[in-house]
Image (cartoon, rainbow, N blue to C red; front, side, top):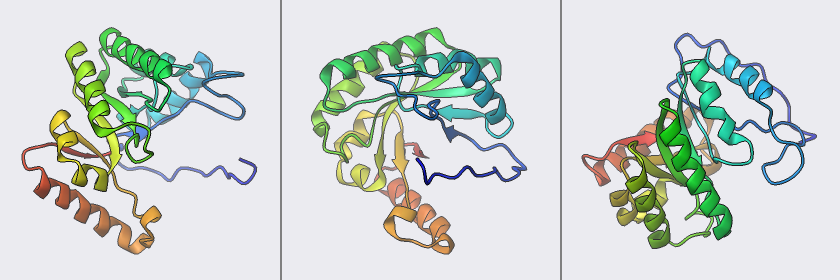
Length: 204
């Protein structure tokens, strides 16, 4: 964090479809110490509301549960996240919280159960599918998981279990240059569309 530099955001002519958001700053942490305050989240979302129509979260506890109702004040849609790893107790809390947020906040437009959980090797595909199915039975919004594009390609049963594919396309991490990045992203989007015809693909 000592090397992290703050960057000014470029002017945006048209609002972005969505941006990923985490409310933690400085020493704040979901499991210990300080957590985000409503005032801090409100200030963040006030700024973001000038740049985007929606935000994506990665968890639903540890202070993040404050985000959806505050986002509604600024007309922002929210894709709620449930953080899934090897900690079954935490997983249960996350799932319960995500379901509750979806039921109580009309601006929640989807739930992402897990973020690169298969990629990190923290859940088996069949176990993650069970969690996704459980959430789907409990809410009236689309449910998916977030995974790198090749995890979707290689696990068609995972794609069959979700309402839409939330694919992570990361040209930088795959050593593509800035000049190649857009073409590579479009190529991988097309690859997934061809692999899963009729399934909505979202570059998440």
